[in-house]
Length: 136
Image (cartoon, rainbow, N blue to C red; front, side, top):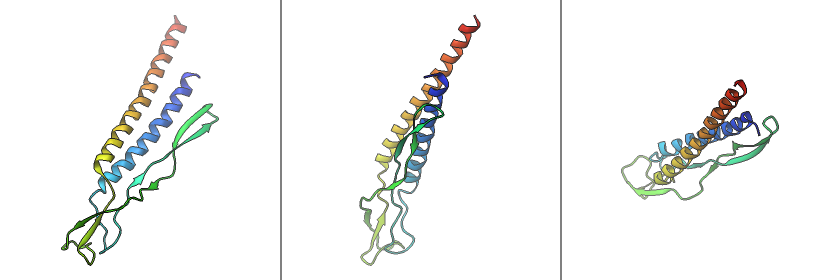
């Protein structure tokens, strides 16, 4: 595997982790949103998935974002009878987003992003050193 291939494969990982972080950020941003109508459904947590695809141009498998799936777990109910989105019993449904889980997912995505970035950086260094040797 040459340097350009390893950089290209790592770049697809960077792109996938960046997309994952955007989805996580969206989940966190909507963690306290409610429905706009009484008894309506609030924001539902989105879960990113990844796929491995053969890239003939690079000559290897690369990672891409798969379909977004919706977390089907129950919404959080809070008793807030004065809230505009409260149902007949005074309960408001809040998103099924747990900010602690989202924070841990964000940290994992960040570390994966940094690992791919290190692959790009080291490959560039090795390419530069190879060119220095060939010039010498």
